[in-house]
Structures are given as structure tokens and as C-alpha cells.
Image (tube, rainbow, N blue to C red; front, side, top):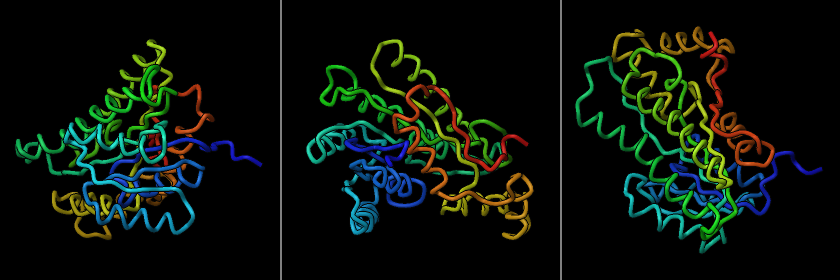
Length: 269
């Protein structure tokens, strides 16, 4: 029986796909039948991830991409078109975490996190929409999925600068979804808001809890997360990827401009 979220004959681009949530998204989209281009600034890790997935019989490739370099977006999408013949799905996943209490972040840190977490999503959306919309080189519409965070929905100590970027992603998602819908582009745009997920970035968050005095030890930091989360645990990258696959597929054909929370109930508490 066909999976309700089948992605057969679709082409996807996932940024920041070498590790963590990005890699899990690439794997889940490919398992759904999509041909997937993994991009990352760390090409060695990206190619290693692609080799691993290809070894499982999945149709994937890898390319080097600095998502804040506007000149690299067209060439990355060109690679998707040349290798796989189209572009139907963009997962804007690349991002970084910079923590610290209010007043502790330098201007350089503020510019850096805004550029990577916000500007890259704007650049990616512009480039993808140009080829997905009617008259574009792919021209079949598509789905754009922007990775935000629950820090873009609720307040979290030590997350003010990071949360500001993720709130911007949420807002940008809504504006583009409405605009593309009104213009008849056939492009849906949604944001995904993970809680704390078992990735290297989660370890950064836990370390920052300790650094700013919100927890005395790694054990205390993890206990604090458990107390904040009704399900009492961290999420997995696969659990986020499952939602991304749904949003990439026709199973979510009437969903656009929405935020999809994957946080074990943290933001509901």
C-alpha cells in the first residue's frame, strides 16, 4: 500500500544536511521516494552523509554550500536541476545556536546568527520560488519548509538572540505563504518548531544553561529539560523529520503558513 506521504518523483534540497536534523530530513525524504540533494558548508561531512544514505539504496547527492553566500544559491539549485531534473521541496534547515543572557551578546555574534538563521532562509526562499513558480525552470510549485524552534514561540532564558532569529523565521514563513498563495504560485510554506532534540546543538544548549548559571551540572541541565517537557525526554531528529516529510508531501496539501511544533509538549506547559 502506498504511504500517505509518498514523495515519488519529487526532488528535494536540504541545507545543513551533514548531521543532525538536516541529515535525518534528507534520509526521511529519500525514504519517501524523493531524490535528495544534501548541501552543507562542511563538504566532507556532507559527502560522508550522502555516501551512507546511498549505501542504503537511497537516491541522494551532495554539494558544498555556504547558505549566506547569495551567489551559491543559484548554483546549488542548478545542481539539483542538472542531476535530478527539477526542484519540488526545499528544507531550509541550516542554522546555528548562540546563547547567553540578555546583554552578553556582541554585535558580531548578533550579525552572525541573524545572517545564518534568517538571511539564509530568505535567500533560499527567493531562489527556490524563482524556479518552482509558474514559468520557472521547474515550474510545478512545491513545498518550502523552514526550520525554526520553540524559542521562536516562547521565552527561554539564555536564548534571547537565538529566539529572535527563530521568531523572524516564523514571521517570514507566514508572509511568504500568504504572498505565494495569493499570487497562485502553487508553493506552500510552513515552519517547523522543534524543542530540544538529541543533536550536537542540544548539547550546546545544555552547556549554555550551565554557563549562564541556569544549571549547576550536565545532570541538572538535563533534569531541567525533563521538567519543562511533559513527555519527559528529548526528541529525536527522526521525529522532526517525520513532520518535514508530511509537509513536503501532498498529504499536507491544504497546509501553508502554519507552525508545526515538535517539542514533547514543552510550549503547551
